[in-house]
Image (cartoon, rainbow, N blue to C red; front, top):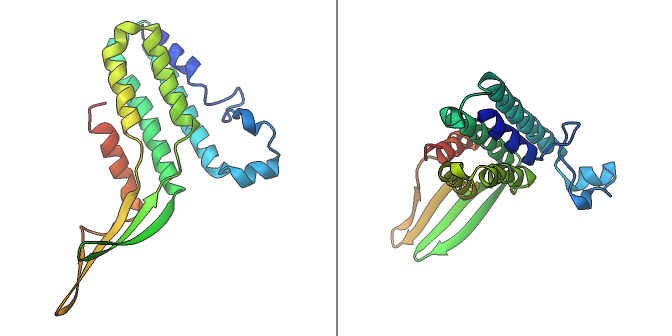
Length: 202
């Protein structure tokens, strides 16, 4: 039943503690408040906590509404809630990312590349996969759908987002510049993340 699957997932998706905060990793228990501010992005963490709580709230609401019904009838809604949460978190990681510029030569071309590098994946993504893996172990009959979703989530790790790719070629008549596609901004990230996660009919 749907309610059993949701309960199993939430019990293993242990990103939040009883107070709704991200669970501290073993080495963080010794951090003072000042140390936490220095070594962790507390603003990003707070936003991810909200995304995790919203994910759990939506799953619980789905479970309450269709408690006694088959999981198969609502698996698309179940997975959409989870993938939407992942999409939100990936966008947040880009928002807190770093812009890097590279200059390199490729044959006779000089390349200027500017990319937005997202914050590295962390506990949220790990716990998301843990939750689905736990459901898979508890209910092996659901393996075809769950294995596919787990694989897609693992392969959908955010990669640096190219903002600008400019090529310069020097020849006898001077310099020739060209730009690969339209320059992009951070505002283009959400659509790219969404398309990557939902393009496989998750």
